[in-house]
Length: 107
Image 1 (spheres, rainbow, N blue to C red):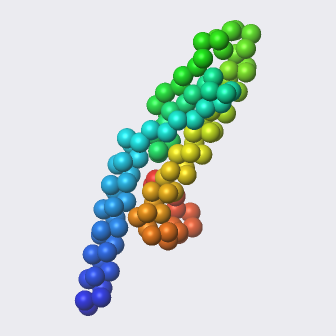
Image 2 (image 1 turned 180 degrees about the horizontal axis):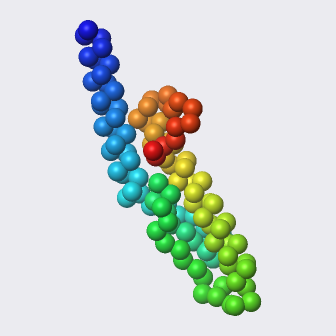
Image 3 (image 1 turned 120 degrees about the vertical axis):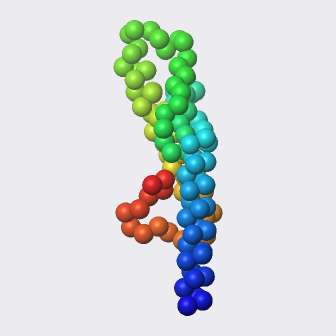
């Protein structure tokens, strides 16, 4: 019985740490860019979009399609960074133990 109680305590501690990290992910901001920094995107570590900054020289109506493409590219850049950050933080909690198939952090 003692072993089971110890496992349950460890599971509860792990759950608490995961909850703490999930809460932290809302406040951590990560920046991504495209077009040599002409378009910048900021998201939370959970991937929620916070800000888009666009160099004023890109506001030419003739360049709208390029601007749209740069925004998409900047978002992809920052999403990869946010995913890497989340995976790194999760690895700290799980000691590098992989999550079961189909599970992803943040939940």
